[in-house]
Length: 429
Image 1: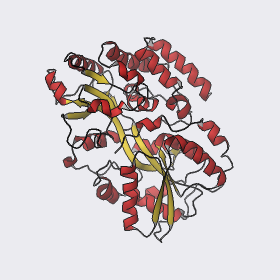
Image 2: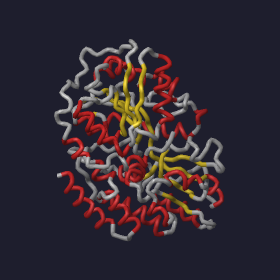
Image 3: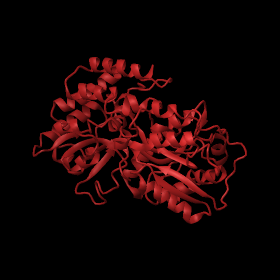
Image 4: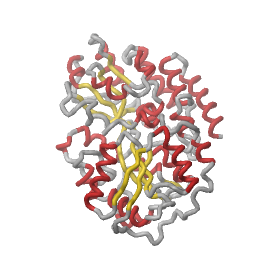
């Protein structure tokens, strides 16, 4: 599965608020699902997906098409064009039957009334309560569920077991606290020969949302408030920034991290020169590391400062039935199949790929690169805010500026968070 995280920072070329401003009259269809039932009668369904996850999105659709009369036609919409294309189609009444989008964009789709309420349908099918929680969280409003997981992934850290061994560390006991990570990273950096103890894509706003946010969440501190605004100016965020700054100041994180806009999210670790890489589970099964990597590696949860504190950002895509669809029964047939236990076991895990469902056991034969993320996804979190693009994903937004200034430029975390809070409030309030 290709990494989708860099695309998080490229969801829109314009403000979502601006893009959606022209959509208010775009859909007058009811979002209710009364009377809808699964039908496989040979309908031609349309589906939008974003590129980068074809190994899952296209493979799943191919399997559906092979086993059903209904046929789903995929359109790959570039991530940086998705918002604009969505806004235009919503206004003109030409949305596809099924929308699959980066799950952090789902709050906009739901708020705009473009997605069908799937709550009762999912309860009847047995999928309700058994789907990746972050995807459901991002696709819900007022107690109703409007979208389901399509592609699932989760953030964690990768660690090079060979470097752990060379540094005198136990390769079977990855650090479970910040102090543990710092000590391990220091020991690995001392190996020399261009080896660094830690790495993070430090100039990729979306990547940082994915793998830095868990260090805040692990301290039981929320980043998004219930009203969709943001809470940056707090001790937990300041401590998390201080943790990453310590790694950078110690020389454990290389200077190249500061300008990495996401290209090195997995590739730097794949070089074998990094001990601990803050990233995710979605790239370890691709050519990035290969099926037969040159070194042994492990996966571990991103911790907080104390033992037992962990958190994870569940990324990927969610799928929703468009309220503009003229084939809602057939679209539900696809979603019903997509979220079934049979599809989880016989399609997703056979690809192999992480399942949308949390109640399907992952075979141990698939290895830690599947079993570890599958457990983390059960407790995954995400951002639920219509201001995500402007505040978090934007390369000029307060989130990235806060991280860069505190971690790389020596600005005190207290000043960095206060500045970010002021800038975020100016956008959301």
